[in-house]
Length: 214
Figure 1 (cartoon, rainbow, N blue to C red):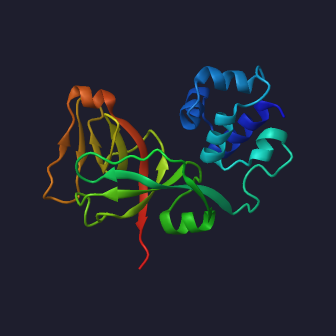
Figure 2: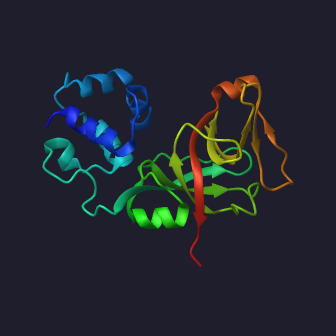
């Protein structure tokens, strides 16, 4: 199975991304994507296969042989990563687990109708600890996010600073002079990032919804 065929399928599923953006999405080195796309290497490494499955929902058999339906058998279904031990902090700091996610199968129509999603890749479910985003996100809530490095002002994002995860509203100056992470709970002050923190800020994804069983 040519590695370029798999990369092309990934491009078809996630949209028009350049090699750097695909590398960021999958967690690969850009040079590795270039070589895979040019069939300069014969096969994916095992760790790369695991990343592709996790991020895209492509089946292992398709990656290895090309003989399977590329995405999940049900065209209305997508893979969602559930991280039982990853917590974003609506307050101070975060608790971050290191286990592999549980892969869940969810219908596209549910994600579209329930959360307003139009793209169905890079979807994660994690937990929130802290009450600074109440009432929208209560302490202990489970949230659904979509991984992206881009976000608009006033969107609720998962942000990483110094290896800690925060869930906050994003507010930043278009000229890059300042960035604030805003809490919905007015009892908490805004987090004004200094220059060093601004340089370390990484947007992990956008929060699209929360849910909890009765």
